[in-house]
Length: 339
Image (cartoon, rainbow, N blue to C red; front, side, top):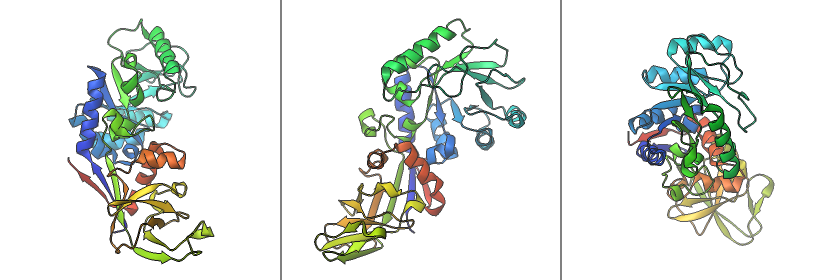
C-alpha cells in the first residue's frame, strides 16, 4: 500500500457540536460540496446530521441527487446555479435551489441570494416574494480576514431583509463568521471548512477547538545515503552539502501531495523531516537525521502535521489541499473510523 487516508468521523462530530455551541440556537447546515472537501460527502453528511446539523449544502444538483438517495429527509440546498434542465430533477428530489438572477421557478423550494459585497452570484435587491421562497441568504467575502467589511455586509443584509416574515429563513454566516462574528448568526449558518477541522483563518485548528478529520500516512520505501555533492530528484534541486541520509516516500503530486510542498515537514518514525528536492508524480524525498529501515511510518497529515501548515508553505489554503487529496483518493485507500 503506497499510502492510506483516514477520515475520523468522531472528530467531525466534535467540530459540529463546537460550531453549534457558538451558534447558540441557530441551525447549522453542513457544506459537503466537492465530495465533502475531499473527505467523502456521504460519510461526512451522515456524521454531521447525527451531531445536530439540520441541513446539507452542495454545489450542484448532481451532488444533491447523490446525497438525497442516502438522506431522504433533511433540507439539501444547492448553492451553485442550476441550469433549466436540472430544475425538474431538483423538484422531483425535493432539493432547494439558490436563486441569484431573479427567476424563481415554480414548485421547487428556493433561497434568494443577495450580493452584499462578494461580487459574484446574487441580486442587488430582493425580488417580489412567492410562496416558494423559503430563505434569503448572502455570502461573506472577508469573515476570515477583514471583519469590518464582513460586518458591513451583515448590516446591508439585515437592512434589506428586516421586513421579511419570520417564516423565511435568513442565513449568512460561514465557518469564520460563526467563530468570530456572532452578529452574523441569524437563523442558520452554512459551515464548511471548520466542520472538517481545518481553520478558516489559516492558523492551527486547535486554536478554535477544532479537530482535523483527515489524516494521511505512508512509509519510507527506501533510505539511501547521498554523499556530498550528490543530488536527488529532477533538476538536481537538492544537492547534499555533506553526507546526508534521505528517505524516498511513494507519494507525489499524482496523489495530491503538490509540487510546491517542497520545504514542508512530515513525520518519519517519531522525528520531523523536511521534504527536499522536487516532488514528482509518484515520489517525494525527505531529509533524515540518519538511516531508517524501509517500512518506517511517515505521517503526511495528522499527528501534529496539519494541512494548514502545509498550505502556508505552498502559499495556498487548507481547503485546496484537502480537495486535491480527495480528487486523488482513488490511488490511496480511504478508511472511515468513528462512525
